[in-house]
Image (cartoon, rainbow, N blue to C red; front, side, top):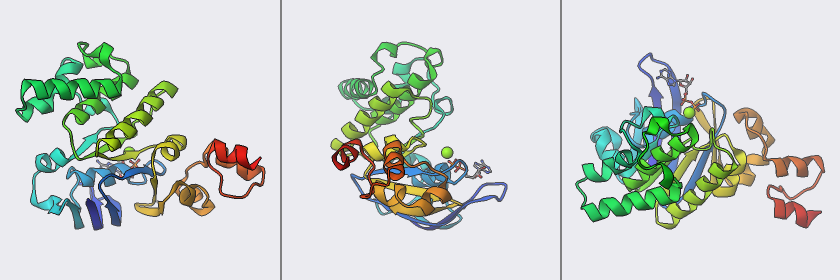
Length: 262
Ligand SMILES: Nc1ncnc2c1ncn2[C@@H]1O[C@H](COP(=O)(O)OP(=O)(O)O)[C@@H](O)[C@H]1O
Ligand SMILES: [Mg+2]
């Protein structure tokens, strides 16, 4: 599991972006982190793979303190997909990008091929394998970045705003991808501004605001707590909003629940 214990983080300019965070993520969980821009979501997940080291408190990944090892060591376990694929991608074709980590790990040709095929299939990017990533449309380029991390087969994968810039199809591919990866035993952590994506695909939702976690629970715990919605500046999912305006009780969030009620 990933344990963040009383951890605070400050940037080199001394700006404190996280204050005394406590968070435990267990193996096999599907966790979505929501909250307004600047709340500290990215800073927080970058602590999970050692890119950010806390100045007080600790981050422990499977028993190992991120302060005691290199980023490369933690990254083998905790894969991080950047929000902006251009900060991550550096190879001249999508295939080279996706093969990069399996080859770096000196896996057999067969294993490299299998990993690439699998990642490409679940990211639905088969058509673009031999294209220069910078000639691939941005939303699909994001899937190249995701596939590259999937092919490195981390135990935990962090997706930073994967839904940003995606259309309905892209969001559906992401939903299926989250399911496939968790069924295969990976722990999936995402940051998202798409509340429907969060409630449809993640069992646990964490709301962040003002450098901290303000609520951690089920979709209903978050999206039927008006205080949390206001503090985190998030939106109640559309079906929930409709149920609220209709004055229905039962903390409805999903279409089938609304239909039943009506
Ligand atoms: N490299 C940096 N140097 C200084 N401040 C930063 C840096 N990166 C982010 N911040 C600040 O830290 C806060 C949290 O940022 P971030 O974790 O990116 O928020 P979120 O992902 O929730 O939008 C913001 O106020 C942001 O301006
Ligand atoms: Mg962010």
